[in-house]
Amino acid sequence: MISPDKIDEWLHEVEERPDSAALIIRYIANRLSELTSREEELAAENIELLSGRKVEEYESRIASLEYQLELLKRQLGGEIILPGVAPAAPPIHETVSLVVYNPFGKVLRLEIEPVDLSSNQTIARIAGEVAEGELQPNVLATTSLEELLFIFDSGRTVAHPLNQLPVQNREELAWEKAFLEEPRIKEELVAIHPIARMLLFDFCIQVSRRGYVKKIKMQPFMTHLAEDYIGSGVKLPADKTCGLTFANPENVFVMVSQEGFIFCMPVVKLPTAIEDVIQLGISDHIVSSFIIDGERSLLFFTQNGKAVHREVSWLEPANSFKSRGQPLLSKERREAGIRLVGAAPVDEASWGLFLHTDGALRVHTLEDLLATGSVDSEPGAEQILASSIFPLPEKSR
Image (cartoon, rainbow, N blue to C red):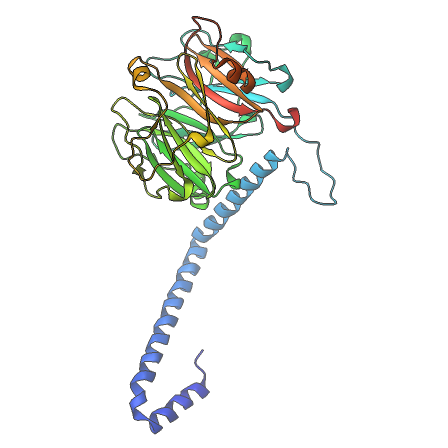
C-alpha cells in the first residue's frame, strides 16, 4: 500500500536530491506492475468462481481426500479409532482373495478363510483353456480389504474395492462366469495392483515390459488416479506397461526379467522421466518389480516349478542406467529354455499362489518352498504360468 505520507516523503527526497528521481520512479513502476498482475489474478479467480471451474476444482480435491480417507479406514478394519472414542462398528472380518485375470479384462475371484489354507493345496482349477491364444493370465493374492487398480496398456485405470468383485464358486471356476472390466478398442488389461496402502509411500514407480522406469511423486500420482489415467509409461511402439511399485526414499528397487536378469538400485537414484534402465535381449521382458523394505530373502520361480532362494545381500546395485543386469540363471539354463515367471521378497509368514498350465491354483508356505526348492515335488507336474506372494491377514497369523 502506498500512503500519502510516503508520496510526500518521495517528493521531498526529489527536491533535496534530484538524482534519486529515476530510482523512485523505477520503484513505483515495479510496484504498479505487481499490483496490476495481482489484480489480473484476482479477476481470473472471480471468473473461475462465477463460471464454476474453481468450485469443480475444490470439489475434486474434496473427493480425492474422501477417497484417501476411505482407503485408510479400510486398512484399519473399517473404522478409524480415536483416543477415548469407542468404535462405531466392529472390525471387518478379513479373508484371503485369490484373483486370476487375463488381458481381455476377465477377472475370477476366490475368497478363502485363512484357517482353511494348507500348504501344497489345490484351491481350484479353471475349466477349459487357461490362456486365450497367446495372451496369458496373471494372478494376485491379497487380503479382502484391498483396493485394486486395473491398469490398461493405454494408461487408463479403473479402481475397484476388492470385496465388491463377485466371488466365484471354486467348483465351477471358468472364464465364462468371470467379472468383466471391458477394455476399450485396442486395449489390454496389463496389471491389477493393490493400492490401499499407497498413502504410506512417497513414490510410485512405473515399469514397462522392456525395462523402462519412471518415478512419480505420490501427490501427482493421486491426481492422475483421480483422472483415471496414469499414462502408459512407454516410449517404444512394441513396449507395454508392466506394472506399478510403491516405494519410499530409503527403499531399494528391484526389477526381474523373464530370462533371469536383475536390475537393482536405491529408489532415490531412479529417474523421474521415462528411461530405459536395463538392456534386455530381443526376446526378454520384465516379469516382476518390487522394493526391498527390511526383508532378508528373495524367491525366484521358474516355469518348471523350481524355487530359487537368495539372500537380499546377494543383490548387486547397478552403478548406472542401461546395464545388462545381474544374472540369476546360467547361460546353459537359459539356452535350455528355463525362464522366470515371478520373483518377490519373502519373510517367514509368506505364502505363494501359483497358476499352472492345467488351470490349477495351488498355494504353498514359504517353509515348504525353501525345504523342497520346488513348487511341486511330484515329477511331471504342470508348468507354472504366474505366481504371487502374499501374507495372511495380521489377525490370522
